[in-house]
Length: 107
Image (tube, rainbow, N blue to C red; front, side, top):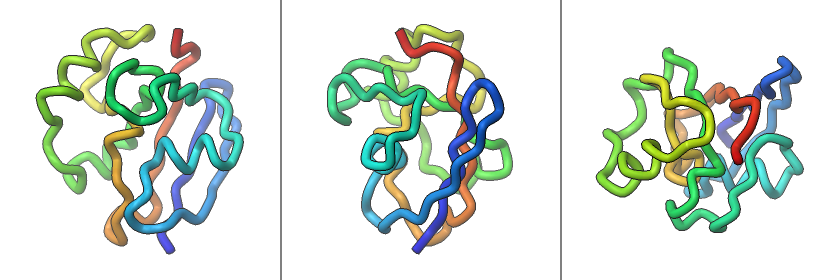
């Protein structure tokens, strides 16, 4: 199974194994990772699962879709070039080792 490392805004790091086909957001919520609120439950409607993807993984992710693009414009913390919504990162074997950093606040 692929592994994802979640890094809090304070630098605390948690690495977990995740099932292919689940999202980075689902796994964070399921494993009690602080910093991802996921108020809409993964429907790409709230931007409270905003993360910063480690640049080494950006070219592996699919392009940002129109819905995600719109929601990234309403994140609490300023959008960065590596911003993504973790509900839109569906895990694949090639994402093994993915590193995401959480902003200081989601709301």
